[in-house]
Amino acid sequence: MRSAALTLFTLACMTHLARSEPTVTICATGDVTFGGWFEPWLDAQVARRRLDAASVISYGFDRVRTILTKADVTLANFEGTFAQKGRRGSGTFAFKARPELADILVDGGIDVVALGNNHTMDFGAAGLVETLDALDAAHIGRSGAGHDVAEARAPWRVTKNGLTLGFLSYKVTGLHSVAQKPSGVVFHATGPTVAWCHFDWPCIRDLVQADVAALAQQVDVVVVSFHWGQERHYDPDAYQVALGHLAVDAGAKVVIGTHPHVLQGVELYNNAVIYYSLGNFLFGGNTDPFDPVGGIAQVTVDRNGVVDAALVPVLTTSLEAPFQPRVLTGYDAELVLLDVAARSRTFARTLPSLTTHTSAP
Image (cartoon, rainbow, N blue to C red; front, top):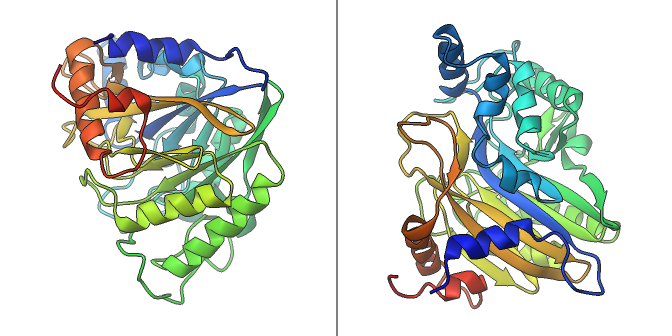
């Protein structure tokens, strides 16, 4: 069997293929948060003189920077806030970090973040506004949240290699069925918000359909991020599959899922790719994750859809390097790909690199 690590690294470096159509390579990661334990851990290392100010910014993405920066565009799901103001919400977990730590994203090669998730409003409207300001000051693109509903639904756009890409992001946590009835609560009536519908399947279905279809008429490639599913579930809910297919049918070429904190399966569908969950990445939410394995999605696209796609397994944290994801190689990578391949068997098509992983190496 060829080395999965070598094959995946080759795909990571491939930004131009021998095709007549121009192509763009996209990397995407799972959950990133600097709140919780990561910020205080960094501060403790500085106090003990184990890190200096420059190393605080470079530490987190140090072992994955090369793979992220080689892509034309890199997307991360950012969970939490860059907030010093605002009142903490009632949730069990609430994540915030100093606004200047947004430079960690810049150093790691992150071009755009998905904010359509359940931690963007951890410190209310004031905390969200601070977060938007910090991202804008760092020149990090964003989608899925804004100063009002229209901005939250608005795409972030970028042109690379002659192709224009549009990124959308939605919070879809709380749904576990495509049969749910409307709750009557849709968006916050006014003010800063995320793009979501409150436990309302017909609302989110219609919202995604309208937004993706409109954007597909304006750009060459639509990328949609969904924060969906159930935590610690390795198989997607039926509504995740339905919503992923709906987004593709409306014009999306890449669908990125987060929230379960574990890797779920990957589906090729109608010349598009759906990563149902990429798990955690640089995640400060806890020090002992339920599953320390995540993944980097790598997709090369042209105007017609997916040209190449792969999944790079990562270890998100370790005792010797807390909160510092690194690429898994060799047998460790093979075992992860075997697991993801097994979780992808219910799909008609999956990644070619996963179809080779049908038995233990």
